[in-house]
Length: 275
Image 1 (cartoon, rainbow, N blue to C red):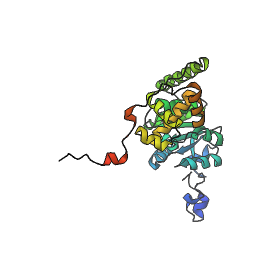
Image 2 (cartoon, helix red, strand yellow):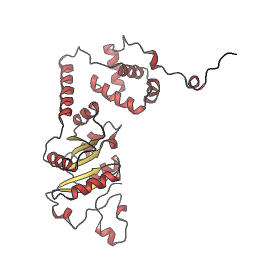
Image 3 (cartoon, helix red, strand yellow):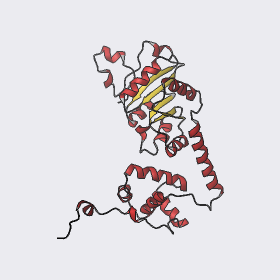
């Protein structure tokens, strides 16, 4: 549900304020209305109510920050961005997990909104990809209230919020990309697991089938594919297959025996000793 502060009008009419097409209008009274024109307008997008409530209380103490809407899903976040002028979106990373074009879609809906993503753990590939796609800041879920407020203000002013570790990751990623562009004959380094997944793709296997073959989940396969696409400069499975054909990427690849799982029946049937 996308929500903002309760509507005084709907309350007076006896309506349920949370039933206003999934949205609640901003309150006409109190601190949030006193600084409407100058306050930083924030949307809180988080699947967990406790985080949204906590962040809202933190921002409510600041005169220059105003929460204009809340969303518990990515779809509702898009609705909120269409309805409310927004300066900053504080977004739970898990809300866009598995959605490759989530950030570009948010930027498309609201080009002026600056995005802060909260993550549970720092993953190099994920963080580099977030910054590459237009995120202005990546912060841990455990960030202190003071730092979160400072982060929102800095990003609202047009700055980028990035820690030292993430700076190193981003610089290294762009160095690798620049190297591949200036030396097109040098193929990117592909790991054994990535090569196994590429081999499955060229055989027309679906993500579910590849996940079973490799012994992992579909989401992990999607993450690997996104990384492979970036490394090779391709955008989909067809381009990947054509790239492999042109560069003979799988010429010397030999599938490892451990990558082939036993058939389900063989796994389920115990061996019996001969009498």
